[in-house]
Amino acid sequence: MMHLNMKNLKLWMMAAVLICGATVLTACSNDDRPAVSGKKLAEKIIGKWMIADIDGKPALTNDKSVVTFLSDSKATFSSSRSDFTESTVKWQSHVAYDAEISGNKITLTGLPNEAVRIVQTYHVTAIDDAQMIAKFNLTRYHHDEVIADTKQHIRYTKVATDYSEAIIGLWECTELTGIETFNDANARLEFMADGTYKFYRKNDAGDWESVTTREFQKYFVDGQLLSTRWKNHGENELREWWEIDSIDGDKMVWSALRQSDNDNTVQQVMKWKKVE
View 1 (cartoon, rainbow, N blue to C red):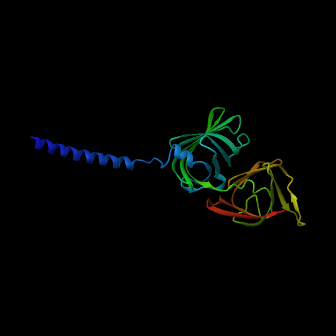
View 2 (cartoon, helix red, strand yellow):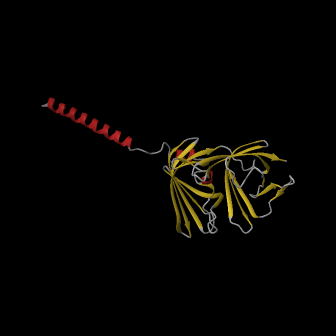
């Protein structure tokens, strides 16, 4: 009788092992949790991040933004939207946001102006020292009414260099490849520390003249992202976006990924020299 009980016990133990093993395999196959969360995510997230891909495709330069995590509770955000209107300018230059981390979820809340509140959530699925992948959601409120809700899968790259100080000064374009945009090869740009800039063109006599038809000319640099906005008298506001590849002494290189008229993407490059 004792022999039969031991045999049954062994059979039950083998069955339990098989069931447990199957459960573990099923759990592993359905486990999409990130490698880091909570405290480790709070440590990894510190720094400056710029959008690289949106929904699996390389992001156009005019769709890029930069988020800087100063701590696990404070961040800044910079972006310039192309779908702005007179009532919603959608221009954020280093706007302060409150941050909160819970598990693999990061929530940012910011107030770009008195009427607008923005809530951004990042469900981080992967992060290391070079890049971060997250399910991103942005909700824009106007007087507590939801006016926009965007959901995307975004890959960010970490930005090691901030060119916001190195760009200050007068620069002359020396080369332009790719399609021409508002900034062309006949241009000088002078960037000031107060976030304004001046645009110069060479006249028929070969002299540089400041363009005086504009009501305002503003810019921001956050990391590598350069965004400009300006308005000519009696015309609509215009904007342009670039990525600063390098500033080395008196040499500066910009690039941008743009969409052409036939829906293809075009890489554009501008080279500059500093004018003393």
